[in-house]
Length: 214
Image (tube, rainbow, N blue to C red; front, top):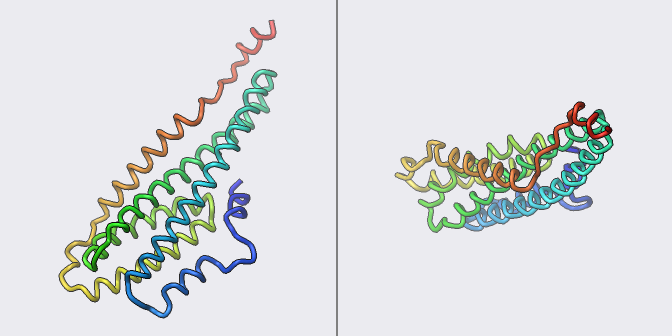
């Protein structure tokens, strides 16, 4: 499952994301255009994760129907196999949804940047959140984890340059609490969305099956 998602994530015969983002910031230029480039790159990741989420939802629904059909045929072994697959798909879907929501929160934060002081204040928690998103999504879609890591490298370079050119802004560095709050909110929203979207798996009971046969 993860390998197929990773293959769908990649675009054949096109320059890699890392190449394009490095071209956007090399040679180093004004911070604002480079920040805008990173902003657009994050928006692209959001769109990709949204597409993956839809594919997972379709896969979950199709597999869930197989669970129900196996349950109706009293085929416990097959129902268990499909139920385990549904469970894994839902876990992946929640990671994808949580990652997408966290990235959306980052784009909202970056969209408020107006001056160099805003850069320092906005990027510190954004980078922390991106690191967490990268760690979570890499186990599901390794290519997405790599691309998000490259975006994070860009933001790190922008942050370091902004700090070097703005004495007095270091006191505004985030302690990580802001990013942790973003991730908690994203996780809660992803869990709520999953509960609303996916029905509970049926419980296969041998006793119930025997009564149905009678």
